[in-house]
Length: 473
Image (cartoon, rainbow, N blue to C red; front, top):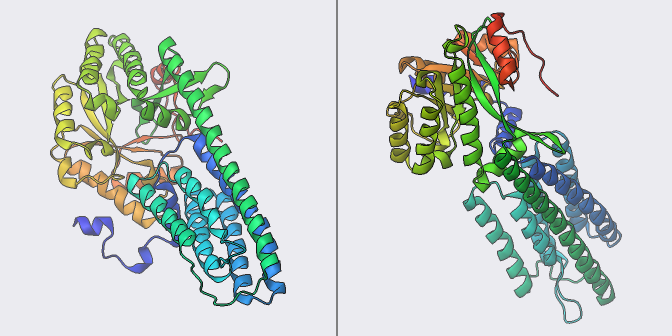
């Protein structure tokens, strides 16, 4: 039964641990641009230390005033800021950001009603911190779904409006005299303004760097600097049976730029289309050159196709034209799609896939199991291969839930007559677990890193099993 394979109804002892659940929550956002991730960490660290410093002053003040609950609230916020710093250090950045956002919001609402009571002499000022908090939430959630971004921003702004317009008073006593309230109001206004400036400065720096990177990438595409690297797909004994073409970019000043940094930017800007066409052209040229080679002619190379290429009729036509112009043997080429492409228009994607497969080109589905498409779609698609996503392979063999999902994908592929490839295989324990499930083809650093085409050709022609490669730092 599929339910049993997925682990539904299994005993509590086999459920994922809290640490595994937290890791999945943090990994659910997928690959993010490195500049954004780097600045998000910086913003969380800066905001946490700013909070600890500010709260230390107010906690001391409220303690001297014998205001126990306000002192406890301040210490709780300081502890939450410390937790955020600890989570960032442990690379649980998404969770850290969410905790910081909602703890700060709850704290501001509570303390504004207990201590920051507006009077004729001193207006309420604590709600001013919600302005930088709103800007922070826009930055933090820019790669989340639109509904999440909109809901959080609306909640924060609504709280700001309520505190700004309504005389919310939960304490019913004013334990601060007017002079103290005026000093506190000045501190809050200055602190909120400084915090807002710091957040906007970080956002502007990211926007400037992203724009510069986008311009450099556009120039690289125009001048043909984009390179195609091949990562071997092997049997368990290290015999090469195929490869996946991966996009690489060597910047004239920065050297090699991480794909995690430029791929998301290229997809947002639309530059992924001409860059993808260049990669396809390089691979097609190589496959044509391999036709008379007794070893290389037996291999199949996968090329990733973006949603922009597939949804555009002109891009799809140009892609097929590249294959024909290079006189590429169609059976040696494979186009790889991601599951997320089917969310927008399943029928349109299926039609394009049938058009491509009608030319003799094979089709593969990448990242299977990470999206939201129905299993029923799988039998309707003209596929030759599915890939077990590395997010499931990463936790093998210790994570029982990941093992159940990976095994289900392998068995499902076998039942449908599809070739199954496990990607992200980095150690022998993962390899053995996948072998036990029935998987026969593997891709990952255990066998080979992505290498230039010439180096891959030498590896394949040598006929030697690929050794285990160390994971790069």
